[in-house]
Amino acid sequence: MKQLKAAFWRGAVSMETLPEHPFPEIAFVGRSNVGKSSLLNSLVLLKNLAHVSQTPGKTQQINFYPIESKWMFVDLPGYGYAKVSREEREKWQNFNNSFLLKSPQLALVCILVDSRHDPMPSDLALIELMENAQRPYVVVLTKTDKLKPTVMNERHEQLKQLVQYCNFCVDVLPYSVEVRRGRDELWGVIKRLAAQFSERISQNTNTEPTAENSNDSIRATQMNGER
Ligand SMILES: Nc1nc2c(ncn2[C@@H]2O[C@H](COP(=O)(O)OP(=O)(O)OP(=O)(O)O)[C@@H](O)[C@H]2O)c(=O)[nH]1
Ligand SMILES: [Mg+2]
Image (tube, rainbow, N blue to C red; front, side):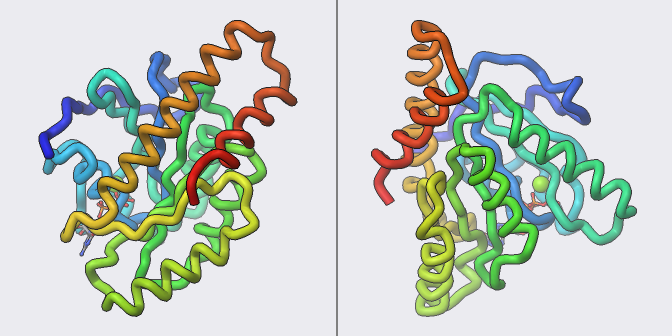
């Protein structure tokens, strides 16, 4: 496993300041402190690409990281950080949701859920958001090194049950930065969905896009994907 070419490129604080670029986006989203930045670093094998903190709520903007001039990783501010005002929290949540609903380059959303707890209402709301938006996502169970194998398997089963009737969930993957669990599997999903996204874009430049045929092609992506 070698380090990938990756660097911080830009941060955005509103829909108006989102940068334009040609790469398929892979977004990382979840509650504050769930391990988004750590996971992003572990995927590219760099220690300090994204800022990891003992203090939750450190990622205060949507951060863009071009990877190998092929993909754009996008680290979103965490949900539910208690120590900022409700107004501030709502502002970030609205920005996150707008990005997830509207970004034209979004190929895959990685929804990170802390494996040590039952999924929280904000985790379920994210799944619902992506289903309503009809955009592909993968559920990643973080910090599984902190669980005994039987407990980890139970949590994995619980989440698979939860999404069994969801149309746009590509997979549910146990992950750990500490013991490098799930890295190859997640890369597999990222590469597959990014390639399908690029193919869809090139097809759509030949066919006049309609709301109907773009949804059909996303759905076909799900149906063809392995579970
Ligand atoms: N044991 C263990 N700890 C982890 C793992 N992933 C992240 N952590 C720890 O969890 C804490 C939060 O990690 P971050 O990556 O900063 O989380 P984040 O979701 O980016 O947090 P915000 O940006 O504040 O929303 C840090 O202390 C990490 O070291 C993991 O797989 N195993
Ligand atoms: Mg972070």
